[in-house]
Image 1 (cartoon, rainbow, N blue to C red):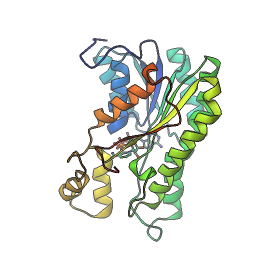
Image 2: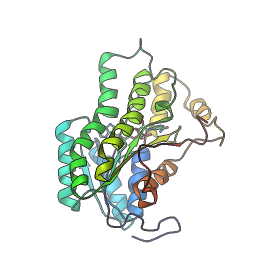
Image 3: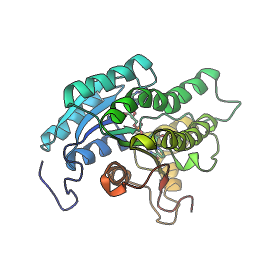
Amino acid sequence: MTVTATSFGTLAGKRAIVTGAGGGIGRASALALAAEGAAVAAVDISADAAAETARQIAAAGGRAIAITADISDPTDCERVVRDTVKALGGLEVLFNNAGIIRRADAIGTTVEEWDRVMAVNVRSIFLMCKYAVPVMAAAGGGSIINTGSGWGLKGGGNALSYCASKGAVVNMTRALAIDHGPAGIRVNSVNPGDTDTGMLRSEAAQLGEDPAAFLADAADRPLRRMGKPEEIAAAVVWLASDAASFVTGAALVVDGGGIA
Ligand SMILES: NC(=O)c1ccc[n+]([C@@H]2O[C@H](COP(=O)([O-])OP(=O)(O)OC[C@H]3O[C@@H](n4cnc5c(N)ncnc54)[C@H](O)[C@@H]3O)[C@@H](O)[C@H]2O)c1
């Protein structure tokens, strides 16, 4: 793959799984990891979206496979790890990024919605780690990055299940770092502030708000704008790389100063 001003081949030889790789932050991260030399398994519940990410990586000269999976499902998670190792020959980086949001308070959230948000945002990380950690440990280590949120570190309105799930992501990241540090596995969370992806538009629709007004509100932070998916991806690349070799159990906030 062509080395550009922002790509230094820091992940050459590494194999990475990215969940939710068919959209916003996941796709940008899959492309950025590949641009740094990693071979990427692009995992998404949408077969077309995963395939498109793999296609874009291949078109840029990188190496990628697409895997269709629902990462809340244990059988799917086991298959994702198995197929990645089979196709790419190993696994050093796991980016647990897929997530969903339900904008509602306790009264407006159904039991089914609560369970789905917790299954996609939290149980998936447990499951992916359950199957990926033994592979990484056997090979001497690796880097796991989990997508939290500013709302994993502070509360937010009309997003009860999401706030609960992202708080869990931040703290399970610390627990995973403690458990698997001795095996050479670093585990960190990246915590974006409002980033320009399909998720923000879905939130505006769920709340019945004008999308333009919603996006303007999202830009109300010290840097006076929303984040770009590529800016979250840059933090993911760093956490995945050996440049972050002594960083584990951390909650890295990438939010233009939003929760500062
Ligand atoms: N966009 C933001 O402002 C923002 C802020 C903070 C945190 N986050 C977090 O970043 C992560 C990515 O969000 P995004 O904004 O890129 O969202 P997005 O909706 O653009 O992309 C999410 C991707 O995950 C996939 N996905 C959903 N459920 C899945 C499942 N069960 N199995 C496999 N794939 C599944 C979707 O198909 C989609 O391609 C999420 O965890 C989200 O909570 C986003």
